[in-house]
Length: 404
Image (tube, rainbow, N blue to C red; front, side, top):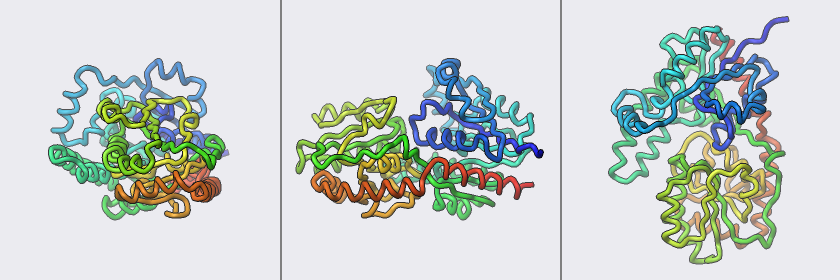
């Protein structure tokens, strides 16, 4: 019996709790790869506390797991980030490329895996010059595009900062794409960018997955209160920008027509400045911070995705659709997802139309029902974690075969 090839999966973050889109995607792909065509080995940073707390869950991620101790932020984190800004590597890559991660990656590579997968392009900053095996990276986003979008929407003082980081990331992603044996992306749109703009020899896409059994269908009742919902890690700049834009430009239009409307922002680490702004204005808003089970908090009449910055695909869209929450989103919010405006969600890109679409969902229960039902059917039939992992595995096998 021929032994399975070994897939070394190098993650820049501990994957529990699954409280961000990237963690959700990577952890569920790993879980569904286990027992398949590869013998899977996961390498990731972890504290002793994290290992102890999540020990019962770690075995489900891979056939073999190994963890290393990465230093925490510490009192000089700001100074290190400032120094990284002046260097050649993008700041987000410098944060990963510490001595502990470089040593752990080199040790794992010495075991001669058949295929090495770097989760996020920034993880390659921890790789030695010679990797010694076919390697790919899993691009949850086009990182350069995110930074370009931040530069486009930033106030004047921050524009050159974002533009400087975008230029560094563009060089980094181009070099990574040309040197890797392949890139796996979360949408065909992103795959085309890596092929056409960054010179990747092979770029293959996977669908976005969601657990439709876990996010059970529970659409809002006809008499549901006018409660709007947003979910997302609030330490992610793109989510901060979207919620701030919603507060300043869209919410006043909604509350003028529906003063009884409320809004809940579900996600870890909401910034103090944003929470303070909502409180100072007396808005009917609530920031939950981290929650153990997003389903218990995400009860409302509609789900809003007022995103102007970002990349890849947003898992939060499919989770909302699975739960039966009708979605209002900007075009960018559902970018890369195989969904149809007017059928699976309502699309709006300026404050007036976004407010109008949201008010329509609040005031028209039949519209809510129709959108919710069509979106749920789409998620059930085409976008499971199992389906995404099957495509991921096929892509890895194809890249490995071509490299050999």
